[in-house]
Length: 178
Image 1 (cartoon, helix red, strand yellow):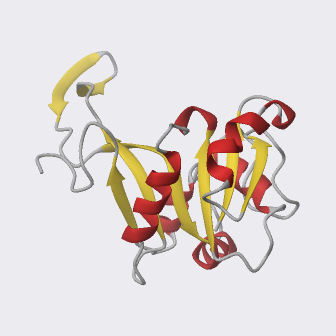
Image 2 (tube, rainbow, N blue to C red):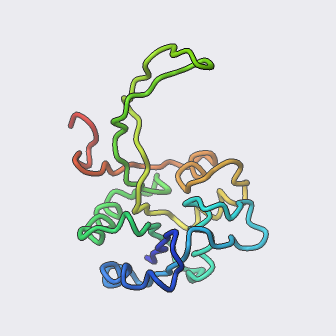
């Protein structure tokens, strides 16, 4: 498994952030999230997680089956342990495991300037990194067209692949209310 480490800074400034992961992964590619995606890829270099991942995949050997997408602000002391937990949750039926934090902010539905109602946060999460992705599924989803996807999980879901979530702190891996 290789890692693609993305950040808003220049890649040359990020090498020290990859150190905690180097022992847990076969290789780490460090890129700016704003790096250009490979030519012919149906995704703009717009600073999204997907654009950063695609730029980093140019440096990942083609025979690598699993890729961990990691952002600098998502690296913690337990980064390698998170990747190991995600790998354990990845089944033959899932294309990816993403880390997610439950939505805690109040949500409201509006019409113009009128507040219509509160929206339940049940079942909603904010995707975080690391995200563990099957390369074969990612390539198949890209071949079908990225559409408006800005992150790998959305791309995989739009292409019909299953994605699992590993709940981030303070919740355990079973999710809210567990």
